[in-house]
Length: 86
Image (cartoon, rainbow, N blue to C red; front, side, top):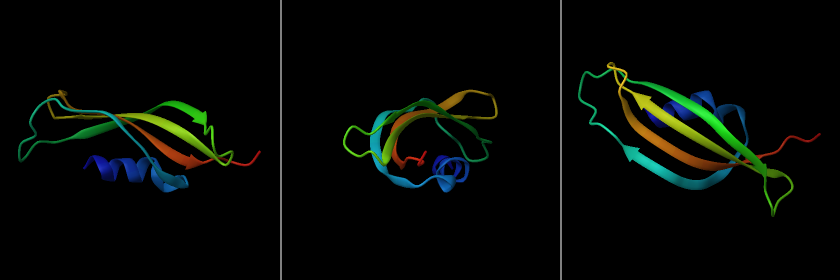
């Protein structure tokens, strides 16, 4: 579920050049059959690559919530993306 949310909402419009890594991943509560999940993705940081002028590092935080509005997943990761030409 979460990977589909990520691709549909963020990665399909950018030139992804690889993952920078997962900094934090927490499964906070179990998810059961029949649960309804919703997600939230926030970009919390951007910076140019120190090695490649055509790339930048995007830092994101993702969360999943169940039907009781309880947070069930927290993930923080970085992705390398192509930078726009100015």
